[in-house]
Length: 60
Ligand code: SF4
Ligand code: SF4
Image (cartoon, rainbow, N blue to C red):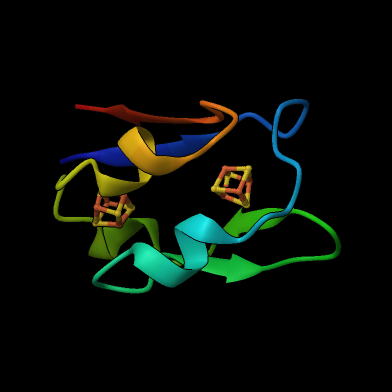
């Protein structure tokens, strides 16, 4: 199962990941993105590629 992990030290809260994830894994937290529904992740890696801070890693 792919598992998205956000490095909170790198996240700037741009919320690109919230916008682009096709299955709405992320939510807008207080100034930073949160992994809301990790079980929904289909491992497309769009978030990992498009996060401007490289703050997201997908673990297999
Ligand atoms: S795309 Fe990256 S920097 Fe932007 S909110 Fe998501 S994890 Fe944070
Ligand atoms: S890998 Fe794809 S499905 Fe999983 S959290 Fe990132 S954008 Fe969403």
